[in-house]
Length: 296
Image (cartoon, rainbow, N blue to C red; front, top):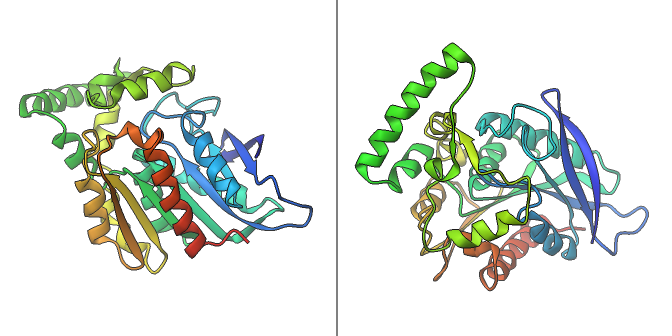
């Protein structure tokens, strides 16, 4: 696997990515391409290189990138901007399809955690997407954010969000808070995430409170049925305490055929990025892509 730094543009902002090519790629070869989408506060260098390695070994050309305002990409810093992220993925698809070694008629997308929500929305509105994989993804932002909080925590958060909404309108800025105040850490696997983030300097620990409004207004399950008849795979775990498996189940219930739901047993949210769960995730992912989007 070789990784080449690349740049491309989305809504006028320069985005930074890495293009991964299979080791056996020869001059004149044309392969299917896959865009990787990171999660809520992730960056392309956190987890996604491992996904890229497996997918390039399977024969795909793979693109990982940072959304606007994340990593080295241009744009307002560290915003969630869910619909803007969808636009970024569409720009990534365009860039990947324009590479001489990629067949623009055979493009897939893979997203993990909040990226699993982003790829659902993108697949629903962009017919260039031929195959989708959503891992531990979110189907309904409001339901998810509410489900992992006690009632008093939820109402306190809504009050803070309402005040911040006024601040943004009057001052043009959102209040920055600790990441854990918006994305509650689950005691089961949060240390795995913390350890991974410590080794990636661009993985930040503060977020604007506007995340709350934007999260509770973005619901990929509203559009997931529009992906059919293109195939979609959902992968979740039965012990995910950060993004409960009911989120993937709801997406699967509303999706059209062909579709599949895989529920891995005994893993938490961040454990899908480590062994042995990682291999289980990628075995299912590669099999789905090879069935519905062969690399050659």
